[in-house]
Length: 214
Image (cartoon, helix red, strand yellow):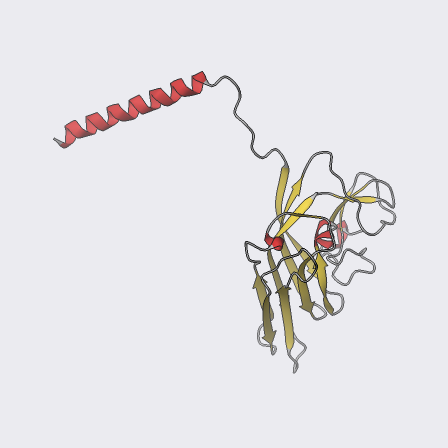
C-alpha cells in the first residue's frame, strides 16, 4: 500500500516539474530584475582620539567612504545608508570608571528614532561594552540619503573602539559631494574618513586602519 502511494507521489512530482518547465518555456521575455542598484554591507571601525559626545548624522555615515575626484574634491562612494548596529568598547584607567552610550533619539526635524539609550559602565575588570540595534521602524534602520538628520548620538571616552555596521546603497547617475574638502588626495582613489565627517588629522573618531585615511 505504501509502495503504491510512493509511486503515485513520484508520478505527481514528475508532472509538476514538467508543468513548471512548460510554463518557463512560455515566458515571452527575460525575468524582471527587482533590485538593480548596488548594495554593500560592511562593518567600519573607529578609535576615539579624545572623548566624543555628539550626534552622528547620515551625512557623516556616507562620508566615511569617499572617492576622490581631484586632490581636494571628494564624493561619497554610496548614495544612501542605513544602520544595522552600533557597537563600542571602552577600558577605564585603573581606579576609575568608564561609560559608553549609544542613543537613537532622532531629535532633528523629520528624523524618527526609537528614543532608546543603550549604555554600559566598566570599573576596570572588563571593558564597558554596548551593542545597539535601532528599531526596524526608525529612520536609522531604513535607507537615508545624505542629510544633517541624526542617525544616532554617541558618548564615548578617549581610546574607545566604535564599530558601525552599515548597509550602503548606490543608484546610478547619483553623486553627493562630501561635506569637508580633501587634501592631497589622488583622483579616482577610495578613502576612509572619520565617523564625525572630518579629515583624519582633525577627526575625533578616525578610522582604525590608518593606511586608508584621508
